[in-house]
Image (cartoon, rainbow, N blue to C red; front, side, top):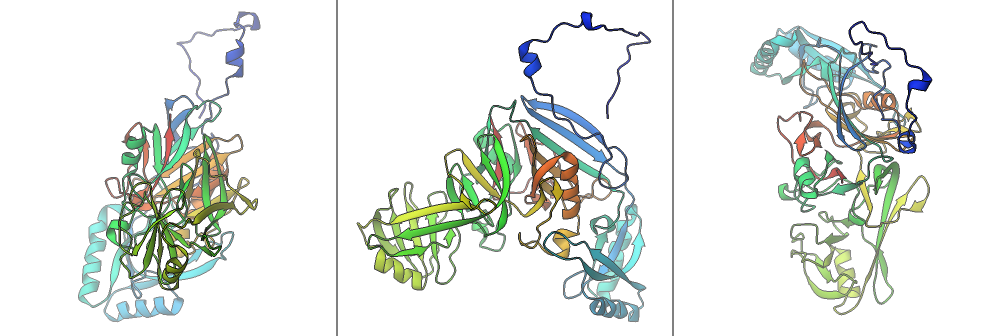
Length: 491
């Protein structure tokens, strides 16, 4: 909110003649971007409380707080492990609890429609309602239900995604490319396979600021869970292939933009045989050809496949069985099933094979030049397009009640009309302190901030914003989580 400073009761009258002429440098200096003063878009329609801190030339950090605590706790009955489902399943769960002497009630909710996924209705069966300071009583109800053979869990009502008073605790980092003289980069840390904290990756790069990047694969072996789910380009090198059609953040020098992409990776043998490489730096599925780079940081899978070890120019140094190291300066073509046969037939030692990589912008149909200044980070869901809310949950693989409607901690990235980069963390999972945001609320927030394009990155316990080496938000795990990749702001 704008403020006026009064010095005692003195009134100063300033005439045009008394104002020194602006120098050419001062006149040309762009105005500092500030948070909107209009009503906050979530909760009660009033202005938010905000604090500002200058981080570096062109980089500003804002703390935004809004709303008040009001939601309490309930107990949700589980239906095959889920807390919501069809009306019939919810009624059956409620009736089971009533038969055991518990006053269960049916709750109907509406999951809002988004750009590529229609509105839907769901149902929950719930028992009881307790204020914020009585979570222990809700936990006691879960215990009693368990003794009666009924599965349930404690739910904070603020997580539901329906109407709430908040509160919200948000950090907004703005980077003005007209003033900032550094650059933007993606980082996977020391290796693709291992997870690292955002602050660790920021420290390695000497970054001024950083946020966590996209989602990573939690459904693979533990030592490989740093692998991005989707595209990753670091300083011009493709280190993880895209899921075609999903949203991504394209970084080059100090410019950022958001689009949908696909990747095309092929290999052509010296005998003219050409085939697709379907994966980069991930575990191979049956009948797949996967490329491993020296950044992978783990042995290739020992899966009875075949491998061709390549030098930097594509020369085949060695044919070997699967399950070996990727030495510095080399790449490894790894084939399973019929693609192992392709390697044995078309990647002979001392031959040269050509690996071609393209990242295609699906909005323009053109290839994105993979220069050393180019990085790409995959997003979880597109949020804003051309200044309007446009949540692409289905295209981005997140079309569910939990991802669209429920509130979680969020990390968001947006670009304004003037090219300003906005990085946002919305803290959550702290009842009474901050509730997080749904996908729809995240889109609304980014439009309020002035983003013309915006994307959702990984959230939950992964959400972290680092400024000058220290977290400025509060990760919901209580400490920083190791993640797959990060977006860095470097000098």
